[in-house]
Picture 1 (cartoon, rainbow, N blue to C red):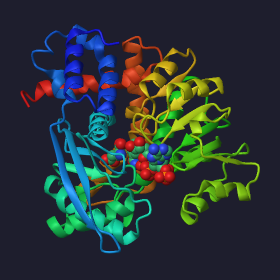
Picture 2 (picture 1 turned 180 degrees about the vertical axis):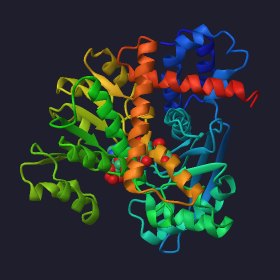
Picture 3 (picture 1 turned 135 degrees about the vertical axis):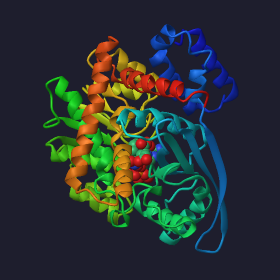
Amino acid sequence: MLKNPYIIRVYNDLQTKFNEQIEYLQAVKEFLSAIEPLVEQDKGLEKEAILERMVTPERIIKFRVPWQDDQGQVHINWGYRIQHSSLLGPYKGGLRFDTPVNESVMKFLAFEQTFKNALTGLPMGGGKGSADFSTRGKSDQEIMRFCQSYMTELAKHINENLDVPAGDIGVGKREIGYMYGQYKRLKGVELGSLTGKPVLANGSLGREEATGYGLIYFLQAMLNEENEEVSQKRFIISGLGNVGLNAIKKVIHLGGLVLAVSNSQGSLYDPQGINIKCLEDILVNHNKDLSIYTQERPHASFSKDSIWSRQIEADIALPCATQNEINAEQARKLIANGVRFLAEGANMPCTSEAIEVFNQSKDFIWAPAKAANAGGVAVSGLEMSQNAMRLKWSFEEVDEKLQTIMSDIFTRCKETCLAFDLGKNYAVAADIAAYQKIVQLIQMHGLV
Ligand code: NDP
Ligand code: 2IT
């Protein structure tokens, strides 16, 4: 419940203007309620319209993307790039190719990205882009043609000093490679115009692993506070893409037991622990059909139900698929099944009602996306540095820097909890820490 009159006015205005943009309104509301005590103390903010400037993107770009399928049929999709904030550097954030994307999803992601990037301590503003196009079921040639057409338009709005996209759902190194190739044809070689590039094409070692590994580094720091560790803990992890798969690998490497995993087709529960070789074989050679797993490991079970609705006793949950994947009922179920920790790999994976359930449960500790999944964009920042310096760091160098960044973000959250008497509410702490930085930047830049 929002209480501060200035905050209420800002939120109500947004609600009136963007009534249907539920994800955007959800992200903004969570943020505004976290920073409410600070706004209450600073009566000068309203005259300067600081909050309005914080929640409103600097620019929204929308363009059509025509492309031809293998049968010669022409299709049209929509492309977006939301350039939310350049206060800290070039707009920075991923591109999502997925059928349910729309302006609301893009605006929430670009908004959150701005604060996440601020937490990394690196010079990156915030942005996000997308297309309502799914790579599922498309041939490699169709995906290449789509990426080329998409970049033909996007190239007008990005460069290494202005806006630097990377991957997100449906966009990995293959898609980035095709887009980078097209960018070069249009504008010449510019190493830092995209990140998440294939390593051979001047991408950074460790970028592919960074979000999943970074998530576990943050979790380790959080567990360490409770004198607990990853080893021997039982995990439920959703999403088998860039974030989920690398989180699974890191957990297994550290001696944790991954009991259940999922993708958009369903979920898999293996009481003996997921066999990573068997899983990877399915992802690469069997069209991601998880039901095949039970043929080799009959004690495991596959279900088309959401992983979060299944009856699985565990200690730690890592949602790494998409927004709002855990609702209040599922949150209550997790707690009833013994889960005591959660770290968000995906952006905004828990509904506001689920968050309420977590915050009301005395012994439940959770890590918000803005802090816990910042490892991906952080290593994107390191990729930009390497590109600018025309050199390449080893995997170990990048990984070490990633560990330092994640542990610094955790320390910042912990110190903010202490300073504002927040207990273990790392989500509110992350919002406050990022807000403090962004407020100062807005004031320093004058009326922009
Ligand atoms: P990928 O496309 O690589 O993987 C997404 C995974 O989630 C796939 O296994 C996919 O299933 C599954 N999935 C997608 N949508 C749904 C859905 N509606 N219900 C159930 N499962 C779903 O994406 P990423 O791993 O890159 O991104 C995952 C999340 O992490 C997103 O929220 C993204 O914004 C966030 N993130 C990503 C970063 C990155 O560096 N890539 C950085 C920080 C956050 P299937 O394979 O069947 O399609
Ligand atoms: O949500 C995210 O932080 C990302 N998709 C990564 C963005 C990036 O620029 O690496």
